[in-house]
Amino acid sequence: MTDRSRCDQLPRYSPRVGESRRTIVDLIRVGRLDAELAALVWLLGAHSVPVHVVPMAGADLASALGELSSDSALVTHGLGGSIEEVLRQPVPLRPATGAVVVTDAGGRVIAAHLLRPPLRDGAGHVRPQAPGVLAARVEADDRLEHFAWGVMPEVAAELGLRAGDLEADLADRAAFLQALAETGPGDGEALRKAIRAWHRHDDRSH
Image (cartoon, rainbow, N blue to C red):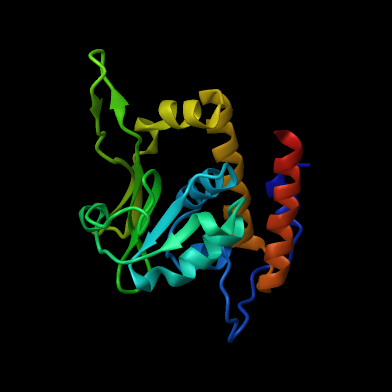
């Protein structure tokens, strides 16, 4: 049985009033980000890639992503309203590599970037690489446009995965999260249990 078919058997979403700590599924439901970006950041965190969320309005998102990471300490939260402002922060106030997720004053993701390690050229000189764009919000129709395909080969190499396997994993995670957002329970702990069950599946598959 697929993850979507399992989720189709769950009761329709009924919001819980006053729930204090939102899950990544709750944030998808209210439009802070979409399932595709959530799946990508989840996969990176699950492989111990640092994730940095800015500015302080992204606290809910940082907390939700910390629950998905292999090490919640790798998900950090700091200052800055753009990738340029983040890069002006010294390490370790921001990670040297990893994902940077930028939110607006309402906590919606407006952009996500990949901080890439420097490269060494043929002469032995170390040269920095510009951040790669993972997603950016299109304000005209209030949606995230995705550009992660441009860095997928290097992400796959960094994680020790084949590009095809990485793409399949991302698609599975996105479908799982979207199904939970559409048909999953409204109770936060029930959502966490569903995601933890995927974590166990994920651990067995690596």
